Length: 91
Image 1: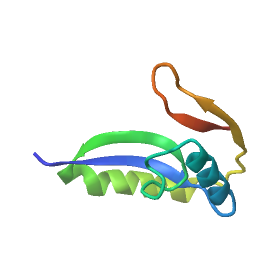
Image 2: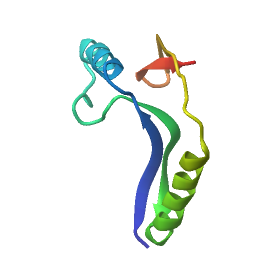
Image 3: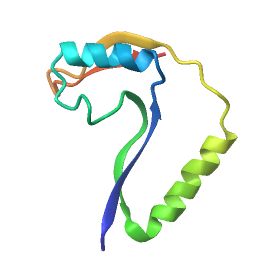
């Protein structure tokens, strides 16, 4: 059965997105330009294609019930030495 890889993210709005991309550029991020600055709420998981509409309905219902968030980004942190990924802490 075919599967789709789905995750749930919040896109970082401007002007913060440009600042994040500046940090990514300075760190040599190879995904710059392919992956927008974002906050991951649910990491990517494999979902059977037949279940995608139901998964989207769950996410849409959760988003509709949620209140706006006030998030603070930074400082920079990393998962090293396990993974060389750099990220901004979210508070």
